[in-house]
Image 1 (cartoon, rainbow, N blue to C red):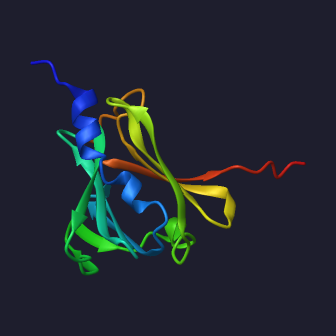
Image 2: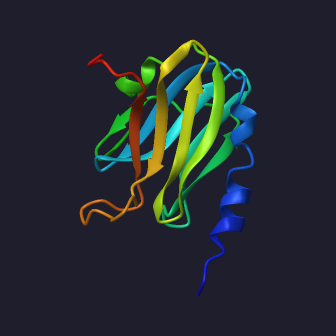
Length: 149
């Protein structure tokens, strides 16, 4: 079976632009068995989640009715993620897709007033899939400043 990833990605990312101009109020991360699985964004435009689609080959944006509760159970947690807390309280200036299906598809978020950093959410499938991880996310902070100068 051949997947039409281009069409799937277009459909699952329709809400990405809705985040531009929104103020990010809170970020929570769903972790299952030490893997990042879902990123929840509470914004002035509503609540959204960023998650793997099909089997995590690419990411999608979904709109939710409410933010999930912070919780910690055996093997499952919804919690804050310290590296992303620096973006809370800031306006999302731009969103964009990065990578492609099976090759690090994800999102980059740039924030007004934070010109040297961005929030990155990406599929684990980036070049090669680590054997111990499956259907999960890579989370990161892009730094755009040469601190050696």
